[in-house]
Length: 343
Image (cartoon, rainbow, N blue to C red; front, side, top):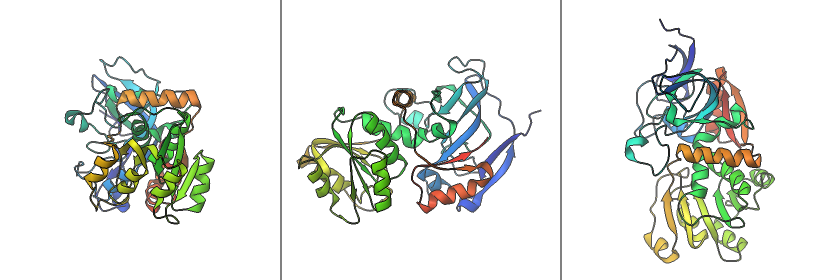
């Protein structure tokens, strides 16, 4: 008989943080091509808040374990597992069957924490195909910050459009997880970074993290003009666009001719429309970013290890403080990833 040593946070209802409860679950047994991971740390993304509030479209609607991002140690492997061994320090790609190449609808549904149980548990079983081995330079807390926001930022910097070269300029909007990790990765790639924020305090922190220039969009509502001025009128080569319809026209206006928009999110809301004329007259390309493949995750880990990048973490909460962790993310006061130490 299976034991019940696993502690997991469950979405008992989808009416907010108060709908989350800690429950005992049966110990997972790996299938032939699965590994069991003792989760050491998990991190919260904006979309996790949407899910627990019942606002994430298309996700599994029953009781489940949330969070897409985690890291830990392998404690058991299935009979057909070949890449991973017991004792490996690992994380899990958000889309577990996306190993390489373009994303397809058939693999898109394989997302723990969205369509099946996620990472906020003391032990989980996942498919070997989605597992990446961590470099020794990363702690479990730092590694847990990467699968969604980190891999998305890396894909946004490296996939689609013309390849970026050292010395070129990227524009990053705000201080969310994708933008802040994108800043760290862009500097490791030798890129020049212009960042935007609404806070003078966060502007100083962005500069401390390596941003070459920061534009306060509250002080400068037409921030695209400031961005162009900082590039001698040319514009930037790439924008990591997380705002959505409310910012995309300004993002396009910030680009050099032939530049690229990596379309990531909609934290500014979903109301609005894009005028296609702005694309036709600027020669820019626009591509949605669907997180990234396992191969892209592994490439990111190589960059991090080679350049000594330490993913920005705002705060680490204890496992039994999970509601406080979600509330901290919901407050919007964090600068860096919010992590829950599971074990």
